[in-house]
Image (cartoon, rainbow, N blue to C red; front, side, top):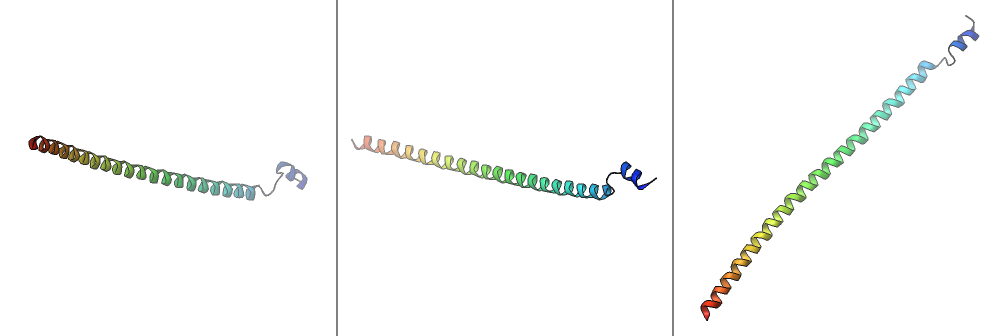
Length: 87
């Protein structure tokens, strides 16, 4: 086979190098995409944790407000009874 025929059957003699380079590019892209996905997952987990903490804090706040409301209502009733007794 002459070199002309070889070049016709294999237009790029560096195909193996090109394939290796392409594979390297694909590996780097895959690592980048995985890193982005991991960062996104970590961010989502942090948001979920923050939301859970906010929910717990809101529940505690509601419980405190309810206890304060009950105490104020009891105080109001006691004051009313004392006023009635003073008459």
